[in-house]
Amino acid sequence: MTGTKIAIMYTIFALIATAANIGAQELFVHMYFGLYAISLAILVGTAVGLVLKYALDKRYIFKYQTHTLQHNSKTFTLYTVMGLATTLIFWGFELGFDALFQTKEMRYLGGVIGLTIGYYVKYQLDKRFVFK
Image (tube, rainbow, N blue to C red):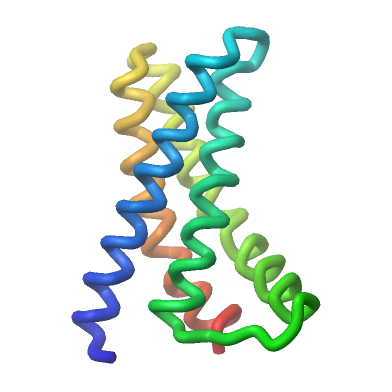
């Protein structure tokens, strides 16, 4: 697969995972109004986006096959660890925009910007350390 095709597919998958992330957050804040609603919504959205993006990246971007549940668990754990720093980028932008602008729309814009930067960094890490 060419570099251009990979970049296009990765971008599409990042957009799908971003939409799932933001959608899960929006659903969560409509269902839960309690303490830490925004933080919990971001956590739920992150989990949804992570699992979806892992499945898409593993199969279509890196064409990586795991042979056992243990191998898949180890690969997913490594994928998740590589995502910790990039998740902090995402959360930093989303929470920063929320603090600065105090609107749902700007919070989500910060989330989208953070996810975009984070996904670029994540691809580089995954290529080198996870799906080798």
